[in-house]
Length: 395
Image 1 (cartoon, helix red, strand yellow):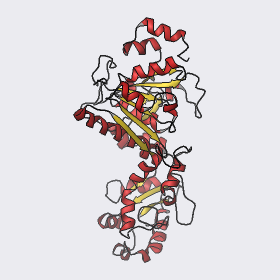
Image 2: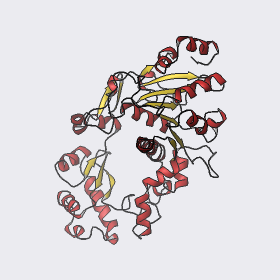
Image 3: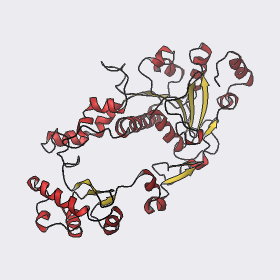
Image 4: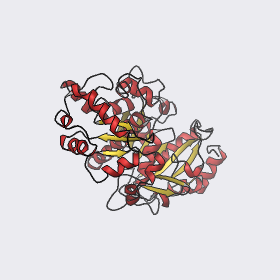
């Protein structure tokens, strides 16, 4: 097959389960760069293709903080020029994966759709991520995480009973339903290729990915165990023993003692009146239980409650800020956050027993010189010079 995972062009020094894998990332925003970052930190050699005339992004970051580019080589190409599109086809002929997050039809209009690219490299995995999928009435529409969650029915489910829906940052559709589902899809396709030798197209949709994350909720609804109303269910702030409460210092603790044995421990230490322990799942008792819990929690500071419950299975945790989380003893012991240049950032996840590329060891940008990048893909200096004269490369 054309896309060899152990080709001579593999970046030297990369480690991890995907070492030697060649990935072409078509630059975009949000979930595709996160997927490419994770593939890179699992050992893949990722080449990020950026528009030659790309302006400043909506959220412009200094290079040392820019995880959308971290650890990848960057090649700026004018894909509207025939020579630029042809160059990308040559690069794809040696790649294992190509991932893109444009609206349907964009790659086709550039002459770089999957039919053309897979003709050059039948072993390529062509990963496509959109909000609405490659077809359907909404496929050409713009959107963001909040848009896709609204259409998936999930935004309706997030928030309190008598308040508007709350956007859960961009974690659910963009990152969970988008980046993670794209990674799962392309890795599954790679496994299938190991048996068949053939590549394929992976069509990942953020609506469908987010909906898949909610599959258990749909099952609970079908069984009559979940209401299609916001803030009245077990996991959406409806239950008083699965919610957040304000403490004496205007901070919060998170309580999640779903199981009776954990709730008993919580009730004993809070303490909570004994009659609540036997009626944990009696919804008629929930208003009084919530008021009792709120009153008790308000009597101490967040850290006092954290200390009281620290050695227990009562499932009570301090609600930490993003900065505080980096310094929590557990996260420090696990080195869950690492220093990468000037950036304090989450460590690569998941972990592998044979190790993955440490983010601190990866330069912010591995390479941005066309000659260095393209010689690894087998182009001669004469070919690279001719492409430069043709105005294919951006600055």
